[in-house]
Image (cartoon, rainbow, N blue to C red; front, side, top):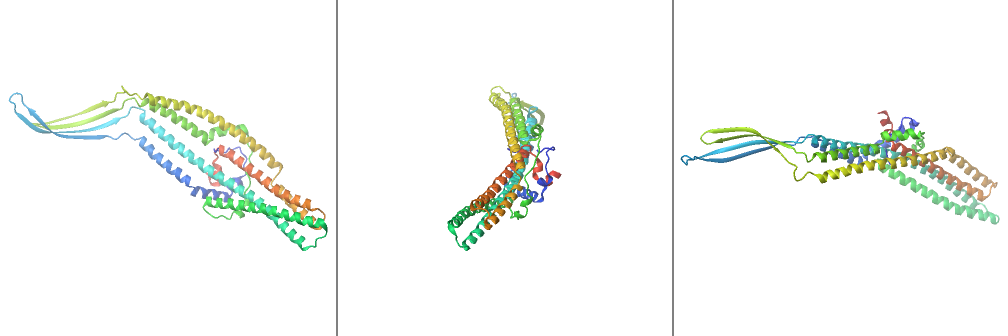
Length: 416
């Protein structure tokens, strides 16, 4: 679910205004096809809005004919010509055109809000993908280190003479473990290249991402839960869309009630005929439809039912939306607390321990089980901590999206 970030949120500026991230978001917004589709749809709806606000076109009528006149006194007959010109202009019952325009305006408003939300979704996706890429890069780096250490150690053991059964067992255990390390390294490399290719394709460019990965940090955010929810209710695009939809349903109901009311057609005319003399006449006519047989009761009932349904839909949406917010907020609090307890620097500590145990094994001060267990724990810590980091980042972004925060679009949006 996607939706304004709040002024009280404590956000490090570098998270949102890092030039590399801004450039990625700018490229994505420039090339993303759904944005072009949404912009074209808005343009079309604005055209419909102009049509909805226009008066009905007048109709021009012309008649030509022959006229005959017979005198009752002497049965004489006279022939002549006749011509009639008229204009019919329909004037709608007051309120019909205004309601039609209001409905069209709401269609434009909803399309524009949907476009804003789409841009926020894309910006959030870029940030999540970049953080995922950094996490996979850290995992790949750890896997490569463990694999290289295992290969070097294997070559060293091969070159050494085998002394006793324990030495042979150690070599075999390291050989088997090296296969596992290679598989993990291969999978991490595969995930990294796949994510990078997808991101570059999404941005329509080949970016030198590795030079910027260290600058990509998870979003840190401190929120007051009640104030945040109040802000979300006031600013969320999703809630605004529901409110506009409800207003449109009300307008449709009012329009349905007005439809049976008659429109008036005004018809000024001019007529001329010529028999013995030229005769001319001008005037104005009126016509009105009478809703005797069809009063649109079915249409009114349908519109009333849609209006009642919309009210219940909004109530259900707000309930589900609040539940989703509370669940997401609770999950973020737990993940954020874990992230503070086990910071990203812990991977560096495990890296140092793995290197130290590797040196000690070569010196013969630790056994092979300690060596392999330490390398495995280094890999597991890199995976677990980076996954926790990306999880915190994604949940924080989802909270920002629920509030439809335009700052997600980057530094340029924040300045505006």
